[in-house]
Amino acid sequence: AGVTRFTGTGWVRTAYHVLLLSHTILAVTVVPFVIVTLTRALRGQFVRHRAIARYAFPMWLYVSVTGVTVYFMLYHFYPSR
Image (cartoon, rainbow, N blue to C red; front, side):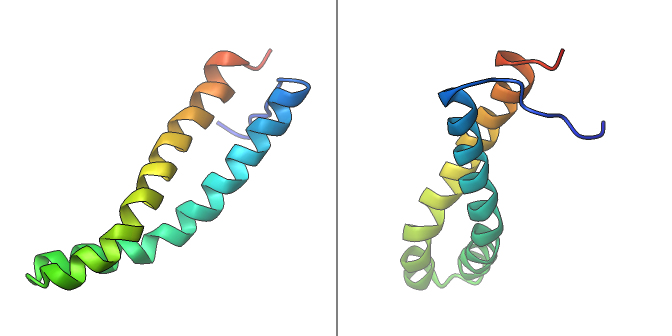
């Protein structure tokens, strides 16, 4: 699909870029947390699983919600002309 540029202006453009940056950084950061959390759950180490899931779940949830938000902002709220 190539590069799609955000066409919004003003404070919405700034908000979009802040959201995109935080989403991207946390998306990379959350991967090891998810792997360790899943591994501990599958091995039955539930006490250790809960200890890391306490941090992994909110990060994963934020990445999930901001990913959908970025998509809608890019393709539906301010579609490319």
